Length: 349
Image (cartoon, helix red, strand yellow):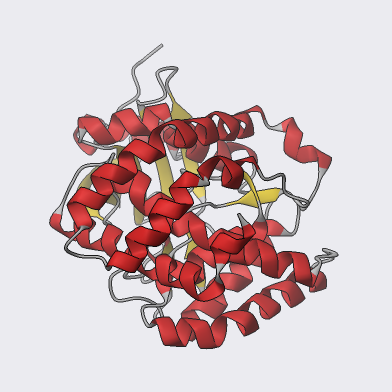
């Protein structure tokens, strides 16, 4: 079996022709340019020069991170396998907006992979540091409902073996998060307020109880549903959801809490809008045929506020460290921490 090319410099015109379903000799050449701000993998825009063939002008290639630490944590958490599996098994069935997939393959080592996707330009990535306005959040919630509704409490969730990685990842979080939190505190002590670390200390002490909760309703969740992982069309505002490396079985309102908690920069604005936004999400689920219980959804939302805080700790201590990354993880911890305090989410653990 031929090795999977894992960087654009390893791609050939013949390989691209084969994966894009083009005849031999149809691709005269291509160029590659780095795009995105992801720290778990590397993304490139390929501009394709066709010899009269009606192929796409541009595609996006996702490849393993050039950083060894990021590759190792991706292997440990099966992140690359999860994204490849999403595009192979579910992306065409579930009507959430995500890029069209031309090719998805991964080696047995769960590190070497190649993913060729449609280029969604002129849609642009959201800015996690700047935050999102309310229309952006509303558009994203519409896509979340489309993701969550089709397999809400469906027995088919057990048909996809790769979803079982989620149980192992939960055990890994329980084992590693307390130690990672100590390093996180050391790194961000001067950046975050004392009340955030007081809340964090109390949460870590109750981590087992938090992770052991059994949800009443399960569905497919993105699990990293924030604006850095959303593309927004500059004219229509339409949303495309990308970076499916954390897709799994989870609780739908947790995606909503994660989105709102990490993506609205002003805590007062977030507090003023979030109940209405959750009600809108519930209404959209119901319109899609899901008998969502409003009280349960609001409680799951309150608990879901912890998800952004946990992700900030776990990711910041495991992926390649950059200046932007340090500040991004700081706001990704600070914003949901304020959300947790405002919602008194600790009372539910």
